[in-house]
Length: 532
Image (cartoon, rainbow, N blue to C red):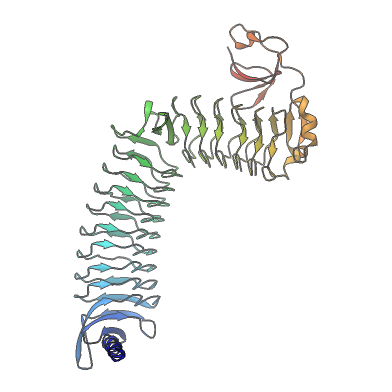
């Protein structure tokens, strides 16, 4: 029994020796072959390759003629001195990272027999100006041409059915790409940061575009989404600054938040008839998503994308995350009374947004909604809001006046940080709202006037943080009401009197003006009055 075991081990050892790789060098190129075969792969040499490289179809070593079948894994890895490569007919495969970071290589000639291009095959070949992919190749794997900065145009063969994630990321001089029919997916990051890409044809066969697929393609101006598209990934067209119009096909039922974030040039948004989820009601030039809760049967209408030419139609209940993010052409916005929540960063970086009216009924205002809105000068927060969220007005450098409701209980981190021109805060809360230590730039706070109800002045002055403001009582002398029978003022009863008058932009007036006035009453209530 022991002898049989020994014989088996010996045979196994001899077998393994029999298939040991054989390596040799011919004309400065290293090869590796399995013993007892004449098939070899080009492998990395003892020293980095340099200059113009010609890889032959066959090579003779000793008395044996070998057939070269592939370029092995990392064979030319970091060979920055290689200037060009010509690969002979007959070779069928280029392995993983074979030419990765050959940063000096300007050209490569691929044989018609090539069937397989490995992941990262030409990663970082930043001097490569053009590549012709043979028809026998059926896929372009992830990272294949990542960082090939000198590529200017690329045509994917009709035989290719798959283009992997990040395949062309960072090809910053690529201006156009032709994709064949038959491709069903544009994977995540595929064309990310292709700065000069102006157009790309998306075949009718494509049903999915992945996360950040075209992110930061700042010159992309013309994209038509195909009729069969079903999935658009998060940030798919984020920072496509040149994109002017968006068409949503009837088949598209799932658009992730921030898909078109920071597309500052968008002028029109359209939705194909028959789309069961998305619409542009009343020609609002904004994308509205209808969501049905199967349990409660509650219908939510969420505005997921707007542009400088949009208006928010009555019936919308939510403004979604990033809906108007970086919409620099937006100068004013009217939010209808049907809206109850505004999602994170909905108006972030709307640099020219000068006025916004937040109606009563809005209860939830998300993180950073108005951050970096540097033209916004005054805001009135409605009484349905109980908390000022994190970074809500961060770096609103033109903000001078804010009116906070009596219902306010807290102000979160960085809510007003960087508001360099903030002069006046009117806070109607009779109890000091909880104040985050980082909610304000405290170097600026001693210059800010804080007006609070007279009964609460002592509370604010006793608070460790609120006492750093210039605390004073609201009002002083009452504002004389106008007893116009056509206004709502005539229903005042008892000792109620008007103590403050504001316009819709939040600016305080000494008396009511023609139009709509926002008034704060001595009994703590707020109302809108139409003055004719």
